[in-house]
Length: 137
Image (cartoon, rainbow, N blue to C red; front, side, top):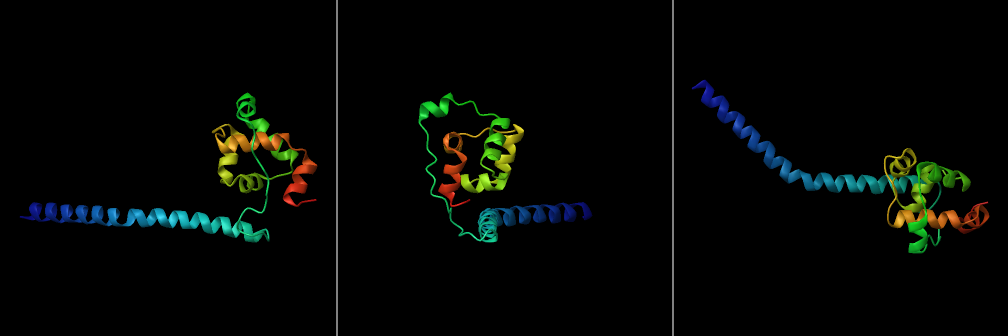
């Protein structure tokens, strides 16, 4: 009878874990989203800025211009350095994570869509225009 009891106990434990997991998965996703929002607010308040984007930059470019631009890791890093932005600063400006910018600069990923368009638009801006637009020096 010992094998039957242990098999039954193991099966009950497995089913209980499965039920707990299905009940807590949506909550865990919500927790991760809230933590991401908290990190964003903390970064913004640490800089003395409001949590919302403080820039009113128009980072749009024509579809033809976006398609014609070859964007690579060194290109992104040079653009960031030209505007004197950290990876976090560029990430905040584009509304993305710093790890995304890092991945672009290491060639593990490529910007697409709105982010690619914003980078092309940033490239067109002179540093003085950029600083004036974001309220910097």
